[in-house]
Amino acid sequence: MRTQVAIIGGGPSGLLLSQLLHVHGISSVVLERKTRDYVLGRIRAGVLEKGLVDLMDQAGIGARMHQEGLLHQGTSIAYGNESFRVDLQHHAGRPLMVYGQTELTRDLYDARAKEELPTEFEVENVVLHDLETEAPSVSYEVHGESRTLNCDFIAGCDGFHGVSRRAIPDAVKTEYERTYPFGWLGVLSETPPVNHELIYANSDRGFALCSMRSETRSRYYIQCALSDSPSDWSDQAFWDELRRRIPEPQADQLITGPAIEKSIAPLRSFVCEPMQWGRLFLCGDAAHIVPPTGAKGLNTAASDVHYLFTGLRQYYEDGDANGINQYSQRALSRVWKVSRFSWWFSTLMHQFPDQQAFDRKIQLAELEFLRSSEAAQAAMAQNYVGLPY
Ligand code: FAS
Ligand code: PHB
Image 1 (tube, rainbow, N blue to C red):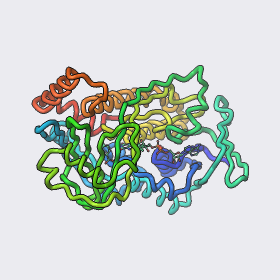
Image 2 (tube, helix red, strand yellow):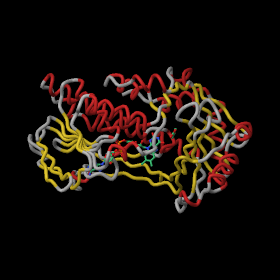
Image 3 (cartoon, protein in one colour):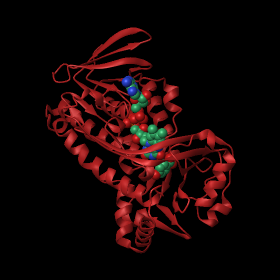
Image 4 (cartoon, rainbow, N blue to C red):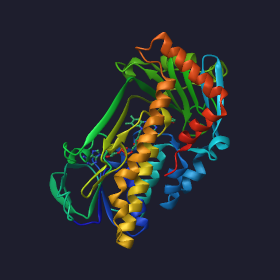
């Protein structure tokens, strides 16, 4: 089989790249390890930057997102008995869109099926070949049958645990990593959100986040020990702990219900340099991971897709290879700024097990400065709504 761009991974990165290429007449095949339903069963990001909203529109599949998504003009930060709102529209000139990654991925898969774009599910033993030639290929198996996909380029969109990053020689690659000594216990519930906008809370008991998927479906997180497992937390224990960590007015109004999903995500910062090798280009979680505090994981996958799509389009339409040759450098420049923001916000909002009393006072002083300073809120807002591509 032959295509112009082989895409490994059928998560949001791979699907969005494939859809954008298709709209501009560039062929691609998506190779996905799991089934469509398995991919759609993952509960992950909830907040979209305007850059990602615009890419969905550019791909011609933004209709349901605009119909069902919620535009948020601000977000709240709580600490101790204090709580303040950061006006995103005022400081950064645009809102955020609340629309779950699951729904965005569903829209992408529905568009693929409608246009009958080639997707291979349940692929195994994916191997990348001849990356340093002009005729790379990907070999793989589907239900025991061996296949080869010949192509011009390979997009490694296979997430943190995929095979693409490993295809870049160790001698060429530098991996930067920081792990955090806690996780996020997340609960999805068919209950109305406790607040009309998100609340990020730094309490003496640990971090909490009140988010949502719609006006009837809420998403909540509490910081938990890395040794915890979801089964350690009954629904009641989760709701009781969440109440202890959020401001009293919201705690009193919290409407609880059965958890329809409960999971724990570890937190890490990770960046692989370079993000390209020969004809292989890494996109999204295959190249970098950020702690979810800043809601930047999915959104940084989107900026990678923008840079790679633009470069590939330039190559095929104008014969100009500058965009693809500069991809890693351009993508990494934004990746590091996003990694810094995600690290800063995570460090500001969480209780660290080895934290000294001095550290806590510094955290509270920074939160007090953020509450009282227009300049500090503007800096936070501009990062949070999304840095320019
Ligand atoms: P993905 O990991 O989503 O997709 C990669 C795809 O490649 C998967 O479908 C996988 O099955 C497939 N694959 C892997 N190996 C393969 C192989 N060898 N061959 C073929 N296919 C292969 N971000 C936020 O902004 N906010 C959040 O709250 C948030 N919560 C998260 C919670 C968890 C538990 C995780 C893991 C991530 C979370 N993220 C969050 C980040 C997340 O949203 C990612 O940034 C986003 O899924 C990135 O999309 P992709 O790069 O497509 O990677
Ligand atoms: C979510 O709704 O899942 C979410 C929102 C904002 C974040 C992280 C996760 O910073």
